[in-house]
Amino acid sequence: MSSQHRSIRCIRGAAMALALAGLPAAAFAGKTSGNVAVTSDYLFRGVSQTSGKPALQGGITWTADNGAYAGAWGSSISWLSDGDPAVSSQVELDGFAGFAGTFGDSGIGYDVGANYYWYPGRYPAGFNGADTLELYAGLSYGIFSAKYYHATTDLFGVPGSHGSGDLDVAANWEFRPGWTLNAGLGKQWVRHHGDLDYSYRKLGATRAFGNGVSIAASWNDTDIDGLDDTFLVSIAKAF
Image 1: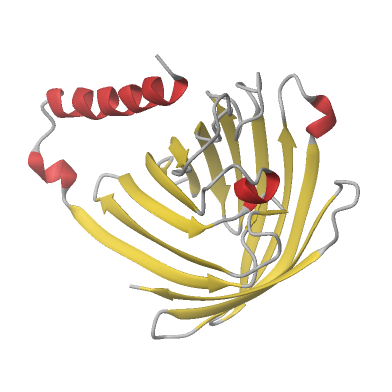
Image 2: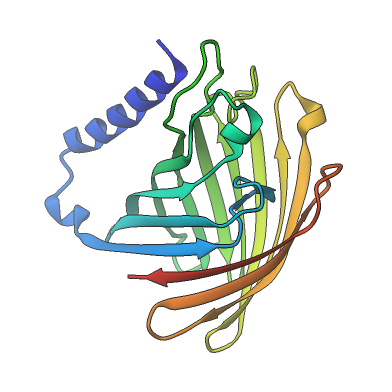
């Protein structure tokens, strides 16, 4: 059985376990939200997924009153076909589920869950697929947050890299109504491929308007040799 099939079965099994637990229907009351965005580049952990070109993105999330959530997100990409002309894959589709809340009245928030990255398309024989399942756990307090991701499959097609990890630390400070300063640092570890480890950083600002529209701009950098800094601009609409 492939790692992709094992991952899907694990997710389905978890959902079935919740259903069999006999939780009351009221526990699943909640709301749905979503967003669409156009960005000058799709950066993931500081690395372009579209070779520096614009991307169209969107997602939807259902959040229960008890803190459980699930959703899907997608973006146009080109990195797989750019790296191998025999590959035909132009979209990333993610499915995620988790649980978030706070530790009593401490003001400390937590977030645990799983994210599955799916790259549909046509691949040559023997190609190690990029589909990846990551588990994550995060903490937040005030303007600060930190989240760790752990890959239970090979990391985006790198052979033998299951067990890789990523730590992302961020600060988002709304210094005046509608204006937020965004800063972040991250480190990606690729198990059994230490030469691929790298760090990344971000500094930017977001302007939110009352109609759900927001505009963001940021400077992004990594310590990957030969990879230039990236200035990113995006516009999003929440609904």
